[in-house]
Image (cartoon, rainbow, N blue to C red; front, side, top):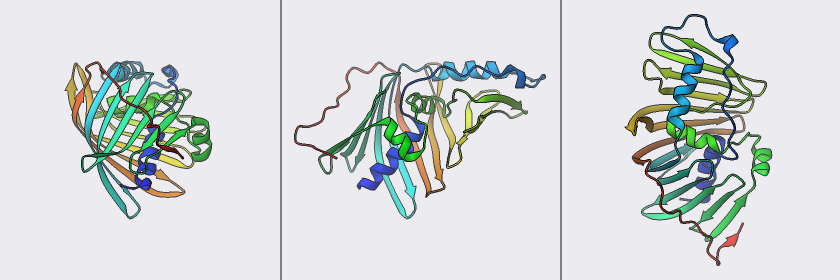
Length: 256
């Protein structure tokens, strides 16, 4: 596992999860179709928000990525505390290669292989990659395979087999297909002028009256780079309160 693996994984995660939480988007009732068989836009937002309301989240599994001619896989462990932090550990052959701490104010990356660390500033990352970065998106993605952005105008269409929530603003287009009657996200797409993220949720686990995706694929497309594909499978998922988060920078690590 090399530095490019860390960079690619981090870039994919950045698009789906860093910075401070924002309030729920108020539904635009003027765009709701007048006749819906079983649910309306406000109903769907309420169901999705209830499913995403996870105060603590622990998951262990595997992650595979493909980028250009490079392919890698690793074990991944994630600890999440709502509005506070996400800790990601990547291991190869049983050895931790990278540990990434996502905080509301910054990102800290430990490179175990080279005994180095990096502290990343959100503003600099946003300017560098031209991406709006939000902290709560990652938790919402992992809890229901979708998230919704403030300031988009949303409207709803429905059919016998699914609902589709569409959102649009000057900068973004969003589409989320939800199954009927389960109201679970099957496909999610978010795009701007330069980047597109496409997510397929392929399996769910029922935990404490919540349905959490246990297997999904993420495609990150950019006009400047080849397509990045991430396959994520959770073997274990727990909502039990986290007793301890271990993260420290060894004194002998060099800053990059």
